[in-house]
Image (cartoon, rainbow over all chains, first blue to last red; front, side, top):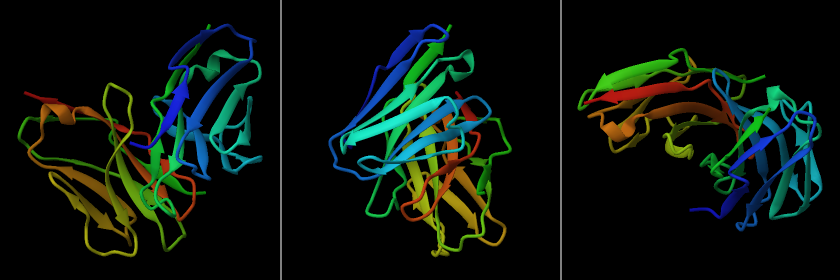
Length: 114
Length: 113
């Protein structure tokens, strides 16, 4: 399968603390995405990147920031974690020459904010 | 904005029977892709089947097939000969060339022995 890994797989953090989730790929893909999954909402886009230092907001970007200083790494930061950010977070790569195969996903990070 | 709607939060089916999951979408685009993803309890997202909007022929992958109705903006998934391993959450998704995917809310499918 595509070389995409997320870390950590699980994390519990306290309200108000900053948290960084990491997505690492070995496929040299230009496009990378961060989604969150919540019951009743499916997957919603937080931020995405179309190249090094090129990022843009998705539909639920408030309270999140991203950075992409290298092609292989896409970091998602919760600046001050809140209970509403308890969720499962997925990183994804565009699959195929023009995304005709959708995405290849990482294994997800379950984040709990207490 | 594009939207994808899955109106069935939960479905159940007996092993070896056939089940159909519904998906509708809203877009003004003419060229796009549609996908069904499976998420078993392991949480991994697995591509089940895909459809290119310019193709009239419905996609088929073994026991999985779709009914793509472009004018009606409908994209349902039919699972034939259901197996216990088909128990999972299923997501419908829409996207364009190099575009972001928009996902539906998901349908939890349970296959009973």
